[in-house]
Length: 154
Ligand SMILES: [Zn+2]
View 1: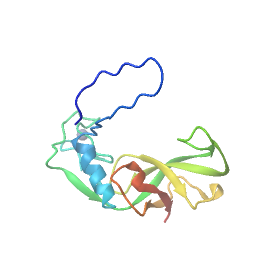
View 2 (view 1 turned 60 degrees about the vertical axis):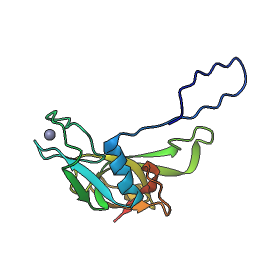
View 3 (view 1 turned 30 degrees about the vertical axis):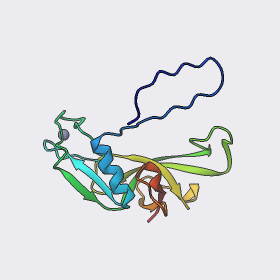
View 4 (view 1 turned 120 degrees about the vertical axis):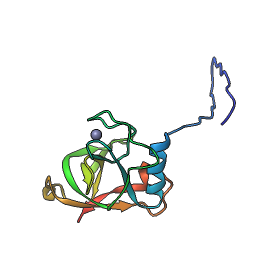
């Protein structure tokens, strides 16, 4: 970690280093993504499985121990919901796109939560809530959410 500095600027460009800590639970999750695997963690009380993992169950407020309750999950899931958009989600300069993108909420099989990703190689007319999907990994992973390129129809 870099030492603390106070940066005062009146004009011009400021450069600063950041140490970003994702937390121990997400750290494990990102390690799994880097190895092209899905993991979740299970609440010891109600048995709900979270993807991404979390420290405290939102339903029963129980702490999920870091050293236990990890579950290996498959690369497949179910489409819970979706939207079709002509705008890029995270790029504001060239926002409008010619081909519509489908953003879906996917429940990884065996889990009880949803994650949001693009649906790839799917025609907007063919999308159906409840359809089975499979993850498409980036060729080179680096241990962050972008390791998942999106999901495609199974
Ligand atoms: Zn619970």
